[in-house]
Each structure stands twice: as structure tokens, then as C-alpha cells.
Image (spheres, rainbow, N blue to C red):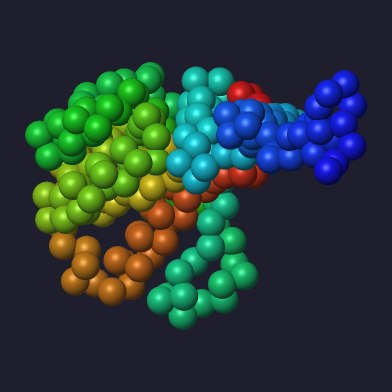
Length: 274
């Protein structure tokens, strides 16, 4: 017989251990899982916050489209801020075309005869063929000046069309392909200057004309003879065609190198908007 204490057998003094009650064990596991989940979420949130801070501290990065817009803005404001005599220098230098079979180191000079007042793009170009296209793409103004080559043989009017951006320039140029420089000589209208070798240079005496892009500008030129001869099919004379193209394009490119000069790609710091 087992020993008793207080009248009760020892073998019945305490129940055998059967573990925690089921509900208490479940609540403990849930609290542990919640603590781990909270820790994981906290670490993830901290990582996101630190990443955001790091990106804020890094220099701003511009997309290709943003870079184009910024450079267009920088170059495109020059037609308003640069003096007319800087856009159209008093003298310009250009080289002869290789098609003429001469020494390409020979530089020729063209002298400015006059600068026209700022005009609308429709007024300064052939309105139906060219002006309407420029206006459709947001052309803001046309700047023009007239030059004469060093021999007083050729007269050149250069026109700079200020466009909203290079995208509009390219769109307008595509529409004008086959129009500017065609058989009708359409393009920039001439700027005759009384009492000078350019006095007789009117629209009907344009021999060649062309245009090209220079950033947010569409640059035009028209060239003719100082003696006032009417328009003739210059392309039939290879030498005359090459010589006139060299003079017209050379003077226009020299103008474009001033007003349309490219700028370095925008970087932060140092660029407005950084």
C-alpha cells in the first residue's frame, strides 16, 4: 500500500504533466510569427527609405528626350539674345567645293551687305510652298541677311527660321523635301539692298536655294548673280552649279555655326532644373 499524507495516497498527489493547453500554444506561435513578420517588414521599409535617400543625394539623371529639350532651349534662345551682327557677322569664310578640282585649303570671303528686319516666317518665305509648312510647325520668326562674295559675282540671302525645337525642324524639313531648291526656286525670299551689288537680287532672280537643320533652327539660303540676270537652269553647267552651291551653302553654314552652335549635354549639377 502506498504511503499516504493527510489521508491521500502519494500516487494521486499531482496529475501527470500533459503540456500547455492547445489554445495557449497557438497564441504563442502567432505572436512569434507576428514578431518575425514585423521585423522583416521593418527591415524592408528601412531599405526602401535608404534607397530613396540615396537616389535623392545622387545627381539628377536626364533622359534622352529631356536632354534634347534642354539643349533645344539653350540654343533656341539665341535668336532673341544674340545681337544681329553676331548672328550675321560682317565677314564670313568658306572653302571651295572639291567638285571644282581646286586646293581645298583656299578660303573665300563673303561680306555682309545688309540685315533685314525680323519678319514672320510666312512673310520671309514663299508663303504657299514654304511659309505654310513652317507656320504649321510653330515657326516663331525669320531672321535674314544678304552677303556678296569676294568677287562681287554672287549675292546670297541667308534666312534663319526659329522653330520651337529640333523635332519641329525635322518634321518641317521632311515636308519641304523637294520643294525648297526645286525648279521654282522656292525658299527664303531675297533681301535686295539699294546702292549695293545686291540691289537687283529679287525673288525671280534666285538661281539656287536650299535649307538644312541646325538644332532648333531651319537655315535657308538663296543665291543669284549680282548682275541681275534672271533665273536660268544652273544645274546644266556643272562648274557654275558647284561654285554657286559652294558659296551659298558655305555662307549659310558659317551663319549656322554661330546661332546653331551645339552645347554640351546637360548634367547635374550645373544645368537649370537640377
